Length: 285
Image (cartoon, rainbow, N blue to C red; front, top):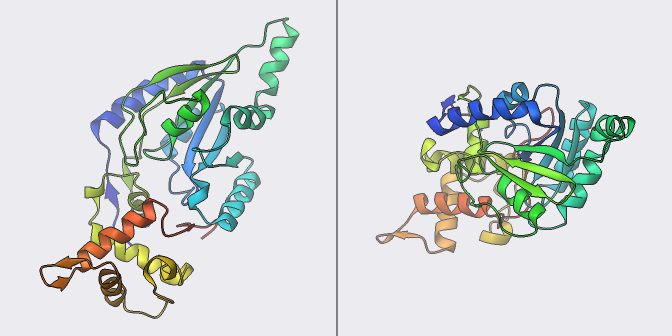
């Protein structure tokens, strides 16, 4: 997945980052959401600085679209770094209970202090952070039990901070997604574009599709068998693969099969999870 470095930092992200700096002082817990298909690439080092020494929980979202064996390896990786991490499908399950259980050890000192001073148990002031389109709003809606915030399978849906009270246990701050200003490692930028964390126009669609196909050739050579009837792509020429996709789906441009339309289709079906469960990076890879 080679690619030149990418600069991408819209003005609203800079504004959001400044606003978050003020909120951190009153936060008990930071829940950082990353995409399970690329947990390292979808973390933001700017958020490391922002969160400081606050208790933190890393949530690998969209686990239903990621390779479960690779996700297990990532959970072990974060544990080895002393980071509490869990994974889940944010559209299913009762995440109030999941979050309460996972955060309990991280909030032990807060609860001990409350008990020591005879205080009533206070709601955990929680900040939900992450780059665009990793699932922040989906998590908030899951926690609320009904739709409270806008959700979309593209970058830049949440544009302003909002506080949401979740019963007696949590008060949650939903925040806009914030990306780093630069991605000197172009491969990381490619992964994020494939996951929909960047605007589609930042990187050429054809380049992204060929990069994705190259990764499939190395790691998942049978990835296109079910959807496109292509048995093994490991030794196939990339143009031939896209031509086969175009023929299978009758993607025409005039009277010719369109490789460009095949590129768009491959990316869309990957983003939507229709191709199957595939991860774009592995620990220590």
